[in-house]
Image 1 (spheres, rainbow, N blue to C red):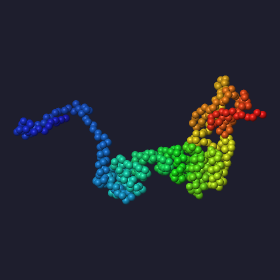
Image 2 (tube, rainbow, N blue to C red; image 1 turned 90 degrees about the vertical axis):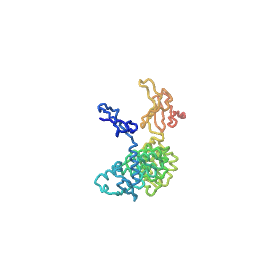
Image 3 (cartoon, rainbow, N blue to C red; image 1 turned 180 degrees about the vertical axis):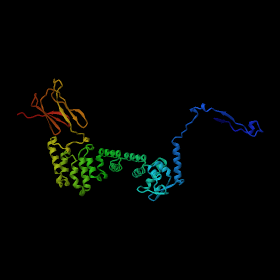
Image 4 (cartoon, rainbow, N blue to C red; image 1 turned 60 degrees about the vertical axis):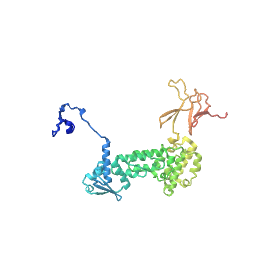
Length: 395
C-alpha cells in the first residue's frame, strides 16, 4: 500500500529555481499494520434522509423529475413514483405491477378529498402532518386507503384524545366502522362513565335501539340514581315517538324501575301519558310496585343495583362461634361476590346470645329470640350500619 504525503511548494521556496518539478515523498505502509482505529465508520444520522426528502419535496413543488400526476377531485398533484412506492404498499402495487396506472402519466383516484390528499402527500414527503378536528376523519380514511399505518394510528390517537360527552358516541360509531377495537372500547368506557352528560347531547338521540340497550343494560353504567336512566330512555323515545313507541317495553326492560324512588315512580313514571297508553308495560310497573312493598323478598334482574350507585347484593354472616366452640362471637360481616371482599358490620349487642333467628326485611336484618333473653328483637339498619333494639308492648 502506498501513502503519499506532502504539500505544494513554490519554486521560490524550493531552493531549486531551475528545476521544472518537485518530487513528493512516498511512504510505504504495510497493510498488515492497519488497525480498526484507522477506519472511520461515518454516519450522518437521520439528517441525511431528511435532507433528501426535503430536496424531493422541493422537486415536487417545482415539478422537477416528477413522473406521475395524481388527480383527486379535479386537482392535480405532481409526484415521484419512487417516493410514493417507497412509502405506500398501495402505490407500490400500483406502479410496480403490470397495471394500467404503471404506464400512464395521469392517475385519477376517487373516494377521497383533495384536501386530504394534499395533507397525505405532505406527510409522505416530509414525515409531518397537521391533524385537526376538521380533517382527522378524512385523513384517517386516506391513510387507511394508502396503507400508511403510522399516520392512521396517529389519527386514531388524536380522536381518543378528543373524547367529550358531545362526540364520544359519534367517534365510537366511526371506530366500529373502521374496526378500531381499542378506540371503540375507549369510547364505550367513556360513555358509560359519563352517561348523565352524554344523554343530554344530540348524538344520544341518534343511537340505534340495540346501541341504547347495550348502554342502559350495563351494570357498569355510571349514574347517581336510576332516575337518570329512565329520563334518558323517555327522551330518546319522544324524539321519534311514532317510530319508537313500539320499542318502549324492550327499553324499560333494562331500566331498573324497582330501584326508583317510590314518589318519583308514582308521580313521573306512572303519570307519563305514553306509559299509561302502553298496556304491554304494565307487568314491569307491577313488578316495581311489589318491590316497593316487599323489598328483597321480590327479586328480578331489575332489582340488582348498578355498581356506580354504591349498592350491591351481599351475603351477610351473623354471629358464629370459635373453632373450639368455646365462645359465641358477636361479629356481623358481609361478603361482596362481585369484588370478592369481606367487610365488617355492626356487632351483635350481646356476646352470649345464641340460637337466635335471623331474617331480612327489605334491606334491613331482624335478629330475634335466642336461648338468653328470648324476647329481644334487634334490627340491623343497613343504611346506618347500626343494630338497634325493637321494643314491643308487654302483654
